[in-house]
Length: 378
Ligand SMILES: Cc1ncc(COP(=O)(O)O)c(C=O)c1O
Image (cartoon, rainbow, N blue to C red; front, side, top):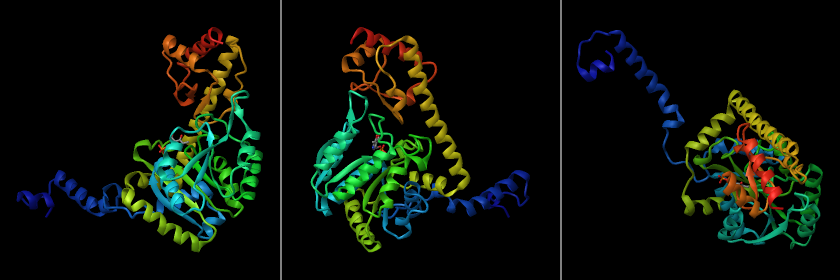
């Protein structure tokens, strides 16, 4: 007898629609308990174990020796910000140095997150307004004079807000300097895949540091590269010197997380794990990611060409040299205010624009506005 008949105590005949409902009920009974979207229990303090493993693989590479040697601890955190905060607090409690060096400029939340976590934020030179590129000499000088063992925050790729990244050769020099002074790298990876369109290429600087066998921290975010902003899904990984240290680090991380938010949310990490574990979905994601990165690169070229064709004064090659979502245009605050007032174009007063907001329709308007701002307000 079908369940509908039981509940309605109607006739025992199995009509076509009752037959359909019957089978829906049976299939639901089998499959619903297996569906993560219906599973609403607490996660452990460290989050979804499979998600943690897949996240570490994504950033460090499937063949990472550190993973194979069980030297990596990964805990699911509240997006990139939460990962930085948990990592910062762990260091403030247990690391022998309390000073973290952060680039100038950097994402506005960095100094606040680390200061509230109990660290002292100091800065190192990063961006050179004159070249609109990397101040490599300034960076190397500042890191050379940082006290031994200090923590150094590094944007893994697509530096926010400048869009300026070191070359691989420069990364290698940074790595050598940092290791020679036992400076502890704390990587912030909020844009993996967004810079070059390749997840592996964007992870290359991080993997160079892991390959030398040294320790580091890594904060990952899936907000941008999976578009999961509001799900607050991220991960903190700590690469340790040995598997034994990794076990102890994990237990101390639990003690940081437990009084902060008990355990992380389930839904976002289930979505990420579903995509990362399934080769077909993973490939589809990488294709979409590449399309996004390529579109941004094409917008850079089109904006550069539009300014060139208007004869806008100045060298705008930094627009095509910079990488990732953001361009540091070099426009000053007066020019930014002019563009807001006259052209209704809104950007941060430091002249940063998000390339993702541009398309073939609004790009000529932006080029007109930049041209007018630069010619009128030198
Ligand atoms: C450099 C950098 N780090 C971390 C984050 C944190 O992002 P979320 O907490 O949304 O993952 C951002 C977001 O804009 C960022 O630009």
